[in-house]
Length: 192
Image (tube, rainbow, N blue to C red; front, side, top):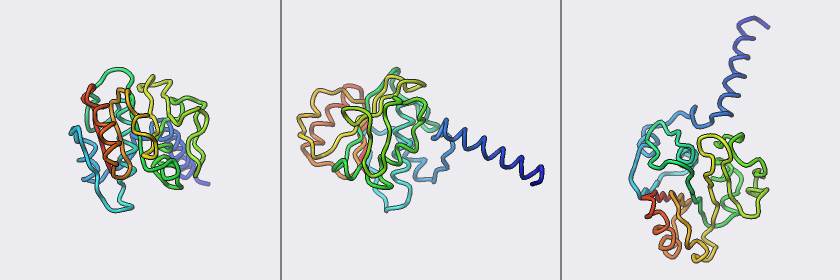
């Protein structure tokens, strides 16, 4: 192997390690994704075809919002925040290649609770309730809670939430319960 090839391999190893440490910093965004990631609207709908990067943009938006590391918009709150990721069912959230798997790929693993792990096709494991607590780094104290439309809307009552990300259109009863949860913090509600 030549010196140039060795240097290239070494550089690649450094890049891989760096992207594992800071996953959202190395994404390359299309024009519509950049517009979405910069959008400060309190209610957002992302409607796009399959396989165009919609879910990828959403999960990076979640991680950057929790950590306050977005290149496109400033995080409006100081300190820890609460985020809800919600969809039809845990099965849909946890499906191979689904939003939870992509979220897991975008997370800086050294910043989240080490008890939490992702099992492909089965979802999050390690805690009593599906959640991703941040224990270190810029998002320390923040939590991403995983919820489903199958839950009783009343089970969502009472929480103060900074952002809700709904994967798939939201049933009216769930929306009516979640929208007031973000009002106190002047938070975001995003639907795909």
